[in-house]
Image (cartoon, rainbow, N blue to C red):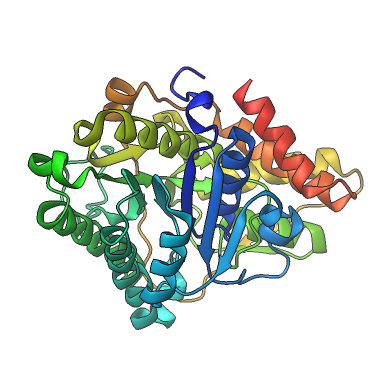
Length: 362
């Protein structure tokens, strides 16, 4: 892939927060494949099963189990590893969980981001930082148009709003401590990345559509869907991760020219309603598992507010980074189903991740 320079990562020292999570686990495996020296900092996995354990993500990296709130421990880890590049993915990432624990969500997503940046301030080895937020950080006006990086930030629920707040924290640190005009003094280029609804093998989180689908179909239960007409920018996890890696390369090589915010989303035709996703997965499940019936119904109970329409405009990434999505939504869903089917049948989860990663990059 032309946008990703694999030789750049050989021997590169990287700190990755959130490596025990779904997206962070995939990024850790990819960085290992590229030859980077990876230090992960995160809480222990919060689900059983989980990708970190199933795929032995910690095998070829250094893993530190720690809380973002523990600034001293994070600084210690950073100073011992002396990373050149930092990826910050650790977060409370579920909308409905943020209604149950709004304070914890803000503490993790806002203060946690500030503490990562504060740790970087004390470590002069860091030259590039990618802070991952979310597509939900925009002030959602429920319109048909895709959001661009210069659209207003907001967020209706505590999760979405906390990620908008994290964007403001990054902006303040960039202006106060890593200002582009003073790059020769501090040497740090700082950017944020906003991706769509990521899917892929190894996501066992609660209250995520694909994970819920696979759990229900595997157990033979009826899947309950809250919002069948909600439209999201669905994409396979490897797509935005390639964007993060590409962005980090650019930040490191060219400095503040690539600072700021970046969207990484799917093709506009792949922003599909939930019902389309469920029907596709049900059809594929029944075709691959003869004699089974994948059933679903609408959950008509009252639920917290969730956005109906959300799309991302990734024109900036295409023009300035040379990044664009390469997988269709159908391909992404099929890869996800294939991963879970094969792992349930006994295939090694790490080997399956690496096989899909190699197929994707080739």
